Image (cartoon, rainbow, N blue to C red; front, side, top):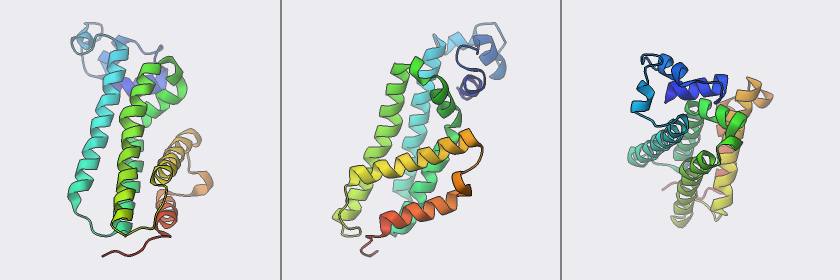
Length: 189
């Protein structure tokens, strides 16, 4: 899946043959080994989105088990983890940017399994901290959307431009985003 996504991002979906994928994945080129795992290239793409969603779910589970105290510390981990996931999804992002409209079902799947799931989790995390009295009331859905859109925009523009906008690196971005959320931080008991 990783090799297929890399090839799709580099050569385009249509420009990538099954033989190309087999060769890159270490299978015998042209022998049909890919079809033992996937019926079509599009099925492979859908499976790759599901695989990315499982990675995101694992990241959320791992975060929930870390037991990190402090809203600021948790938020920094969440934001940095989001950027790491986006970097890991670089080839998928490139493909979506270049050819996403060709695959409405895959786009819908990516939105539901990656974006909407992450948004619901982050909104819930914010809501829990408000309920616990650690943050002042926010529109948690809107704030979660702003955070996700900012991280995604940072990753996409870095991908397109080859550098961060204004040379704002990840540390500075995380510091500012954290400050925006924590400006209404109540306390960390």
